[in-house]
Length: 416
Image (cartoon, rainbow, N blue to C red; front, side, top):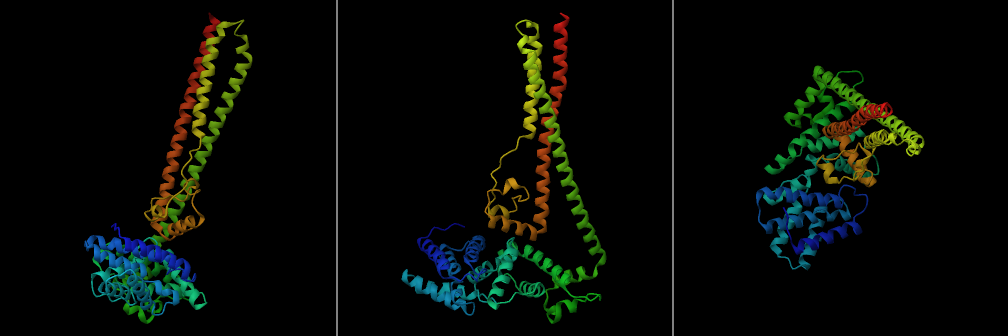
């Protein structure tokens, strides 16, 4: 949803400058990027509801200002965010009733969230939309880092998984649109966290018990997640199949990559052979036969045939080894939409290091994305190999039949 508004443009510039100049660097999650994500989330969630332009404007204003109070710390930051928004909007001669609605939307984001109307539900869902998006692992990693900065101590992996799992399990989206857009991926993140929690749980050689893993809060877990956890812990047959599948998939990819590399090396060697042989033939022909054209003109035609054959063979051998230059850059949007292949250097050599690092982390944390990227990489490696061998096939055919034709031409010439 696009909205052109002078006030919103002014607010955007103000907030960007506000974060750059005032927000402490220790807030690595509640940063400008989070605010931008919430603004985009509001637009995404508001579109299906077809709310009017004024309501959308108020929502976007609340989204821009909702974390400005973090400048003075996380405690009661919503109230301070309202004060910042109010001061700015009053200077812009904004209506008092509209300012009140903006502040109500900001206050609705306070945890635990309890929105009263559609506008408040939309901004609440936008504020935590990352729980069901592909950037979840990056954002939750920033939450962990921010908490560590604030407490001056690093949370252990087990404590972090417990904290994050407790938060995401007790969270619910308020709008039907958010549930449709984010819930499926959110449940996938829950399953991954559950697996991680089970892996980290100390067993001391004893069978894993659900109550031991989840503690007193296990009763509060949602029904579907409890079933997932129970299945992961007790269904040994499924677990063994998963392990075997993982090893089989890894072996398959490893073997296929090795085969592709070997075939590419063979193709390059074959091309090198053809280049060398034809270059030698051309040099010998030019140095020995061409100078004798004046005294023996009957050699002109077969010599030309031989040179043309060798030249065409060299052209196709060169085409089979000629590298293709790519743009070497993918955007974050391409990575979020899983359109990128960061496993091939030609796709990322023009990217910034931080963007490439972020993209690799996104791919590593998303198993589906990782395997689809590897599959895509194998596919295009196969396309390149097919092109190499097609050119080589033409090259060898031309050399073989052309050399026969040239020999026949020399034979006929000498016979006549």
